[in-house]
Image (cartoon, protein in one colour):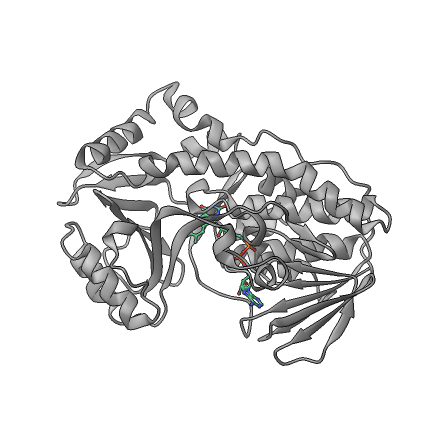
Amino acid sequence: MRVAIQGAGIAGTTLAWWLRRYGHEVLLIEQARALRSGGYVLDLWGLGYDVAERMGILPALQARQYLAAELRLVDAQGRTCGGYPTEILSRLANGRFMALARADIAATIHAALDRGVETIFGDSITAIAQHGERMRIDFEQASAREVDLVVGADGLRSQIRALGFGAEATFEYPLGCHVAAFELPGYRPRQEDVVVIHGAPGRYVTRLALREDKTLVFMVFRDECLGAEFPADLPARKAALRGIFADMGWECPQILGAMAAVDEIYFDSVSQIRMPHWTRGRVALVGDAAACPSLIAGEGAGLAMAQAYVLAGEIQRSQGNVDAALRNYEKRLRPFLSAKQKAAEKLVGAFVPRTAFGVAVRNFGTRLMRLPVFPELLMGRYLRDAMTLPEYADGTTPSA
Ligand SMILES: Cc1cc2nc3c(=O)[nH]c(=O)nc-3n(C[C@H](O)[C@H](O)[C@H](O)COP(=O)(O)OP(=O)(O)OC[C@H]3O[C@@H](n4cnc5c(N)ncnc54)[C@H](O)[C@@H]3O)c2cc1C
């Protein structure tokens, strides 16, 4: 089969890897001019970790992982008021747990494609037309192509979803918060092995040390902290963050001062994508485009990898019956992913408490994590997936 995948993020590269392994011809289309660098650090465990293992990329990922030993909550004066050693999370996941930059995961998988997949950078699909079992795709820049299947792996704000399934608002399920993330070069203080978090009612800010003397700042806040207007450009984003975080203690004034010089801020609502179907005709969605669980689930990357693995596996298993493959892809994963989304929705209150009392309870809860039994009680169910990866016949990798 010829498959066009839009989005060279985590879902898109994983799907390309498995489809290529099964002998299909893959075209990856990425809007950015090169693989995206930077971005936030995320945790990989569960099914995503299992998929990475089956792809043989665990050693490459391990070489790029971040090894912060402690998650530390601090009060407005910088005094420790909660937290726990991150080793607890790893233990709950039976040691199968890694913290990685989102961009490093995508780059590692893309490198594992070993040039066996054509990637078009700086372009996007603008139109999809189905002619029988073939699809014609038009691009912003490149000439039109014909393929057998089009897959949207283009994230929360998927363009393929808009083209093939309808308006984003129909499927977006906002969780009542926004997130902003940016990198600061040379920021001090710098603690290599501690993730520091300062929370106040309706808001929190995190900083963690990245390689090359960069610091990642990560801010989450309730919608009501933001004015009515979504800040569309960089100056508006900076102004919004200054307005929301200026009166918080700890290093907030200093962080906001350093933010003045940054030229990119990731800024979006914390939303899920809930769709009645992830496939229509010969168009399919994977990863955040199909079923974003939101950053609160803390597992979007791994789940995106699992979806890609299952979609490719079902295509392999169906031996050319694409309709059956797409149906089985949904059937296998939908209940599991819906449960993940519901669990994440329930966590919003603990993630961003609205009141000072809520913040104190959350901080206390993190202290309990240091005691026996509590890690299992509080986090155990979130760090284990109630599903195992299906087995598919192994493919062979065609030569590049
Ligand atoms: C702040 C934050 C923290 C998070 N923390 C965690 C965590 O701890 N653990 C975890 O597992 N997950 C976490 N997540 C979620 C995780 O990042 C996503 O679920 C995961 O990256 C989904 O992968 P994806 O490939 O579906 O989408 P993305 O990673 O968003 O990739 C989409 C790709 O498509 C490209 N693209 C977009 N539009 C177009 C277009 N029109 N044309 C061509 N290309 C396009 C983009 O440039 C990008 O390369 C977090 C998310 C956020 C925002």
